[in-house]
Length: 365
Ligand code: PMP
Image (tube, rainbow, N blue to C red; front, side):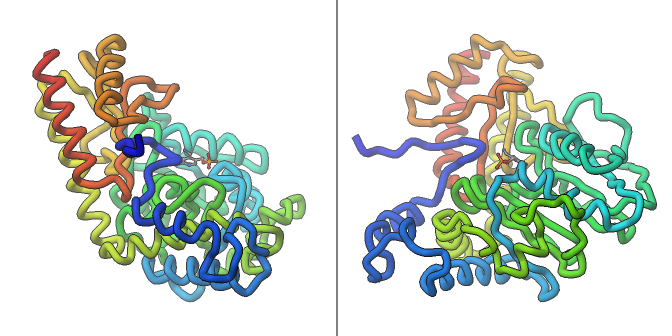
């Protein structure tokens, strides 16, 4: 049977149906040129049009100022955990940087950065990853300040941009990229893996202010050097061509659906529906995250009791799967349930989950 599942995966994640159909339609013969994008030279004029189109859509959707470069890289968000310090930690003489650690992904980034310099965690250690800090102390000689705007595993999302008093700000936006408007001019650098909100795995987009280029440590690999990649328009080596093409189709879809402001409205409505059910469940569904920073993208919760009743959670997942709702299992490090509601997840998808959660609550509370 050809029926598609309702995919609540954290990434790789659901893509808009129209994007998949368009890619399918063009797979064998792109734009009448007789070959697939999968078979095309990255130096061809046809691919040039694809990458330029992807970049200009992104510039338009995010209102990216002229003095920022957009580059498309391989290696995932994880390669950026190294690339960021390799490029930026030498901005000031001391080779040190400030990190906010609010979940798995910023913790990993900080650990990787320690290979290249002195890393200062700017707030008291979080006992659990359930909120963002409300106060912090920055190190005046830090080359940059780093934070993850949405922690995919823990469901912790910053609702505003931390003020770094002018120090270069770097953000991992992998899991909430283009889910809401962002003022790019507040950042030195933004990066995001595509496989959650803007496409498929293989490409990571980096938006970097021009004055930060050309300052990489001498041991920085050329493929990770933002200056080298920007000077070569992301074609220093073979880029992930097909992933860049898919990103272009997704960006077109976002544009046709009202851009980031419309995405934000929809994402608030979607996540609000699920959080309302959790809040109204009398402790049957438990989301540990502080209400002030609950993610609109990834909603982690436990069932039955605070630390989760695993048998009940398994029953929930099995029942969901029978209804065609998949990839709701929490990250292996935290257990429980996680519903990821990226841009491509529709209100109808969320209504189906909401109805199931209400039914399950009625039957088991
Ligand atoms: N940052 C965040 C916020 C993520 O969610 C992930 C992956 N889930 C990564 C970085 C790492 O991305 P990748 O697996 O593409 O290296």
